[in-house]
Image (tube, rainbow, N blue to C red; front, side, top):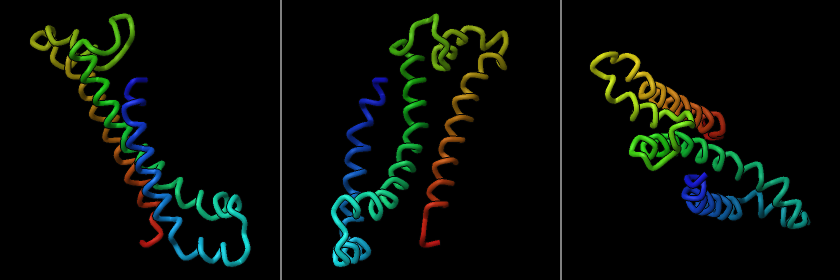
Length: 133
């Protein structure tokens, strides 16, 4: 929850930059010249071109926030012991690394795998929404 609050200004600033860029494009000027109202321009012309980059950016931040949450839990600043969390699991299994290394390495491997999956999802969304390629 707190990481959502931390990343919200970045997403808002990114959304503002994308909206400013789309607002100055030719098809918005053509819609204005054809007599479309401001709500129609925003809903029909701008929203479709703004949501894609914002979703791609937010999906890329999911892996960053997941790694940060796991790191905070590993340090003891995240969730408390009854809650299941990969960083907390890494911290509690630190002592078992010499006895059973595969069990101790599994939460770290899952953090890595899920983080890579979200990065690949973000990259795939960016490639699918790129109109120039």
